[in-house]
Amino acid sequence: MSEALPDLNTIWFVLVGVLLTGYAMLDGFDLGVGQLHLLARGDQERRIMLNAIGPVWDGNEVWLVTGGGALFAAFPEAYATVFSGFYLPFVLLLVALIFRAVAIEFRSKQPMRWWRSMWDWSFFAGSTCSALLIGVAMGNIVWGIPLDGRGEFSGSFLDLLHPYALVLGVTTVALFMMHGAIYVLMKTEGALHDRARGWVNPCIIFFIICYATTTMATLIYVPHMTERVREQPLFFLVALANMLAIANIPREIHRGEDFRAFLSSCAAMVALMGLFGLGMFPNLVRSAPHPANSLDIYGAASSQKTLGIMLAIAAIGVPIVLAYSASIYWIFRGKVKLDAMSY
Image (cartoon, rainbow, N blue to C red; front, side, top):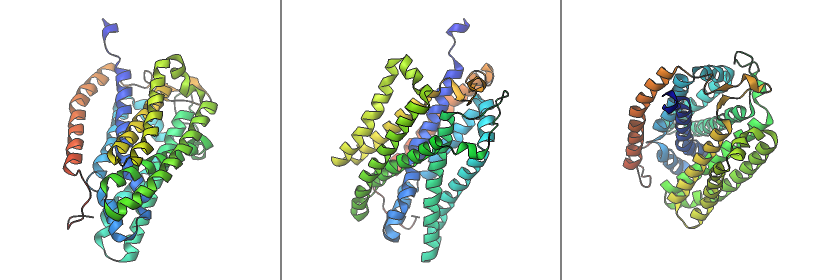
């Protein structure tokens, strides 16, 4: 009878991955817009870029909070290890996200040039640092972190800044920058739209170079991330879908299909997170250099009763979040127009 029951641990592993993928896909273009913010010319164009994300940026960050909450509820030991081991990076990430939010809200409150310039730089710095720190954290999860026999982090902050993690951090910056450039292209018109079209191809090239570098580094230095694909060749379709999605981005840009290019960028991010999940499964936090100390979805999970109750709550809550997000994007669809209520 028990064999017929669904594997709640695997379901929650997938659900946490879906929530974090939603965050990367949605808040990723927010962060990308922030990284490109200083390239806009004049106050008018910078206000347009802010208002391109103005109605949705705070809702996008809910996905990060929800993903963290799901990790806490389903895998509390992994949550404790990650949030204690990455305490300083997460504090820096929180500060960066706060500076972004404050910059968006405060920038246009005063007309002085120095005031707006200060918040423009804060918006740029907060966005870039956030993307970099997210990538560095993922790089450490892939590489593995030093865990003792109790599953507790036994390293230091400097141990987290190794070359592979930094490469993945820069790749994340490049990915979000490309994603944000396509979003700006989709949401603007006139001179800013033409200028944004000039940003897209360099951003795509920057990402492809970083992506190729990260792929080679992964194959050489962290081969465990490809074991599941080697064991189950069917999973290679995820990698193939990722490559096709990336290749379709410049094709759609060239054809002037900005929305399709954005969808391709989203598909590439979904596929990348899928490869990340396939490489990690069933581990949540890999221990290096002692893999036996790794935390997996069974040893670090809550009780089956807790997982079942939380799954019922998620079955109610997630569709509501999806419906809310979809309605906001539908209401604020189309090109950005500045009015008296704009940032």
